[in-house]
Length: 291
Image (tube, rainbow, N blue to C red; front, side):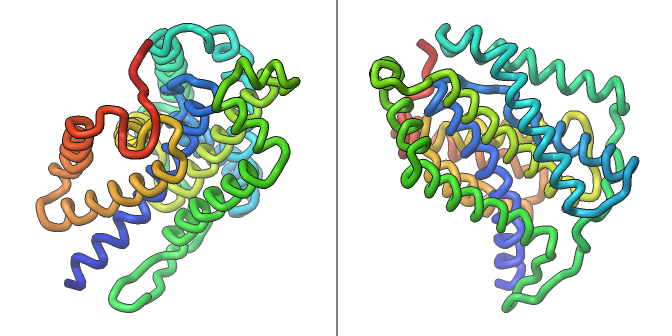
């Protein structure tokens, strides 16, 4: 029983990463209406830039997080201005392929500059373990969970309680009607991509701190889980993405503990197939089918 609880705890931490990335992905889908394939690569980008900053200038967690945050903001803004705004009205598949090209470019550009081997990432948060009942959890793991909880709470408050949030909700419902009401559609779409990208980059900093290393292709494995979570939750479902992300991480933790790491990806794929057979549009959102 103790092994199961520890495996579940470790899985929920990784599930928090899946949830964070999938919430940002679905936020962009709900507001902008595109499948941003490059979103998971901002985890890698934020981690690498923070590694360079911390290595070159010193500093601790604050410097690392600040570097990741700025990286996500700048990269998200550039992605929208140079790519998304020119193709956002085209078919979903066309945008999917275009952002996939951006993802491949980012991976190979970083691999060219930093090499393909994983780089050691400094411990910005001490890997001190705390005993919580029958399980152990480290400060680095807690940081990831806290980031997810804070982001979900802040995002919920922002969307429900602020004028900008209400405009974003209107835009997500119908962009044409929103534009006729005087809502600045392009500005809100840019803001949405920037916010989601910044959180992905921050997640990359904390995830690299947890594992102690970072490689240029980490976005590939996270992207797979991001799509599984987003498809199971349904397009545009933010709360659903967080819940499904945690569930997937917990399931993977138990599978690894009892069946081995080679079965880790099977859990999500089996769950995805099972859900799509029953509810092709996902459990809580709208369809992501190309059209």
